[in-house]
Length: 341
Image 1 (cartoon, one colour):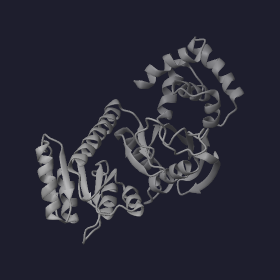
Image 2 (cartoon, rainbow, N blue to C red):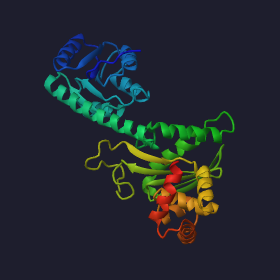
Image 3 (cartoon, rainbow, N blue to C red):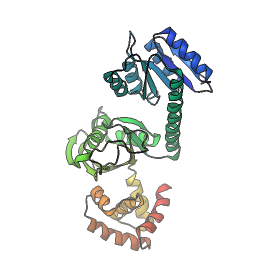
Image 4 (cartoon, rainbow, N blue to C red):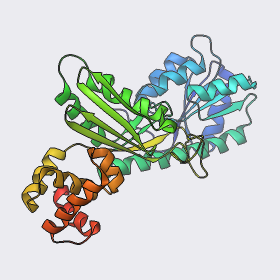
């Protein structure tokens, strides 16, 4: 096991010994631990082994370009979250766009202004720590949260999401095909890409008929062989559903490319059993109560359950009567403790 240095660790990947020496001396003077690599492949090996807090990367190297290096990091789960700052002598717009497209978080030109570089490093280290703390808090809180980019590709997920999706994957398996890769993630990608069109589609897969609907541009409902998953956008991509350019960055938003989504894990069969036994509810009444506990409106429940808001109101009347309450808040207050247990 490799002991990680107590100070922030910066990996510098550059084929110039002079540049490596300059940056190494600069970082050590400000109390940062510096790791160096003259070759991109060596840099990848060090990154995988040491998990640095930030990578400084030359854009042009002989065996592998910095852009290729960055793209390789971003597809590896253990390296994906590490911020990468490009260093290059090229200052043209095409190179800058290429660096950011590859996954870089910043771009500095050579010759290096060491004071400005240290300032940029400090800012990105602080931001990365905040992001890691937030993700750690989500993990510890047991939240079903994951993030995708603007094309719907997974960026990260909490352990709870991974566990729930793997459970679905096993339950839907009808052969060697992976349900997540053939059904779930393609549906998420289609949803994200079509947010501004509010479409409803039905298509078939090996797992059965799947219906998906973009609800108010911020929710997705998937019906899978009699079961259902519900996804809500929590944050990201601007004002979804209201902004004509839905992925514009909004003030105060750290990353306009990251869309935060909550997964309502489908333990509904168990939840239905709990509520039906506790309150003497019918199957449909327990469905309605579950979604009340999840904070859904009648309109949203209508989309999810495939029934009209008027029918939901009729079920609500019976739910209130059986729970001996007079409003949704009190009904949810009775249901939530049972569902949590």
